[in-house]
Image 1: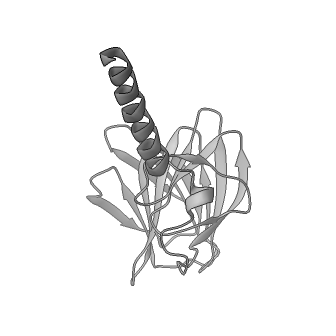
Image 2: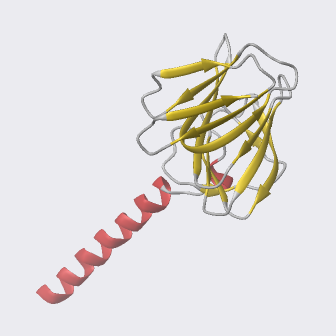
Length: 166
């Protein structure tokens, strides 16, 4: 009798744990965006191999395909031998995210901000939009306003940046 009670108790406890895990880690396709009225900031033009997105406020990384829209606070991550091409809707600025990189896309009332946490990125600022800034590292203390047409940015794991303006 006690063995059956223990078995049923642990079975019920396991099922409750599985239910909460499913709710917490539910794929985005089912959950959707937190705010359906959110305006897209950029579009993913192309993807090579394994590129992932982590939506703002989410824990899970999900695969992302060419043509998908990017929103406020989205993180883009490229694996080894992977890359992504992104174009901002507002100013047609294009980004080439190189392998082993993590980039966060944000827009505030003043400017478009590219936070490069790690890796390399090439920016083609077609319209020479002065409202684009590049922030390096997780602390975000180093910021550069991009007033040139093209720039190459590399950030190592310590957050140290190397920026070449072309």
